[in-house]
Every structure is written in structure tokens, then in C-alpha cells.
Image (cartoon, rainbow, N blue to C red; front, side, top):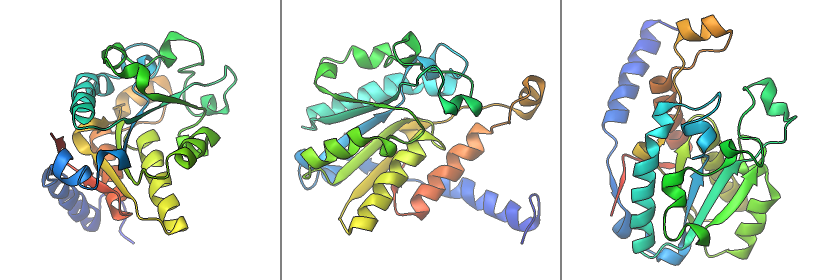
Length: 238
């Protein structure tokens, strides 16, 4: 096995950058909606105040997603998509997740609110809002209940944060669920509408945290989703 830093790892990382740079866009109307807008759902993962602008886990990389996500949701709505699902952290104060991450997005606090640029969308009140207590909304019975009510939905577009955490677990849950049940499904993740945080080694060491290379983990987990059949694209154009 190649050890980190070996020529094998270096070759793979070089290939990974080339793969990422070569991701192509896809057409929302001509590709994703080809079988009808009623069969498509957009899942917005964790675009919350606590990950964008306030709190221990707020990060400018994630915050930058807000305007782009709003523009995409307008495009999707204009194209006829009516299944909009916001999957959002809403932790209890004693969440076991706080053993791994600092307290964040506690239910009922401002951090747990969807960011303003999305709440201002004229159709925001028509979206479905699912609270989640872990990295995966797939662990929540509310998602299964929603899917049972909408068996027509076989295509999912996932946007939000973080690429290697909640987005990854959402995409993989839906992909593996479809495979397990033998259902035809298409799971799209547009690389320009997801991102993850960055915590350099020197900063992490200074605060006693685990480092987190945002660029590497963003690319690596997009690749791992693609490796498992998720349709990773550069962007979804109108």
C-alpha cells in the first residue's frame, strides 16, 4: 500500500485535481427535468446561520454559497420544481454530536435558522422543512415519511454544506437506499453549490482541534460520491 506522500498518492492527487477541473455542467431543464419537474426534488442541506455567519462553525466558504443557492432555487422554481426540502440541523442542547464538534445550531436558536437570502425567496414558505439531529437526514423518520408521500420523486438535487459531512451523507443515503430497494433514482450534486469549511493545520493545532483541508476534502468527497454512482457535475445551468 502506498503511504501518504508516496508517488502513488501524489499521482492520485494530481489525477483528482484534473478530474475536478474537468467536471462539466449539466442542463437543469434538459437533463435533470427531462422526465418532468414533478419527479424532481431539491434538498437544501444546512444552509443555516450557524454554518454561514454566526457561531463556532460559521465559515466564509459556506457563507459564499448563499447567493448562488438562492439563484439556483429561483431557476428550479421557474422551471416547475415544487419539491423543495430544507434539511437542517436542530440539535438538543446535550447532543452527542457535540463530542465531535463544538455546540452549534441548537434547536430554537438563531444559529438553527435558514439564512436570510433563502428565507427571502417568495416561495420559501412552500418548502418542506425537516429537522435533523445528526449529519444524516437519512436517519430521520420524517424524510422516509416525506418520500412515502411522494413516490413520484426519483431525482434529487443536493446543495449546501458540508461536502464531506452532511451533503455526503445525504447523497449516499439516497443513492444506497435506491440501490437496496432496486429503484431507479438519479442523485445530482453540483460542485459549485456545495462546499466545506477550511481549518489549516497550524490553526487547528493552536486550538486543539483536528485540521480540515477544505479544498482537498471537497474534491475527495465529491469523487467518492461519483465513485458510488452519484451524478457529480460542475453546475446545473438553467
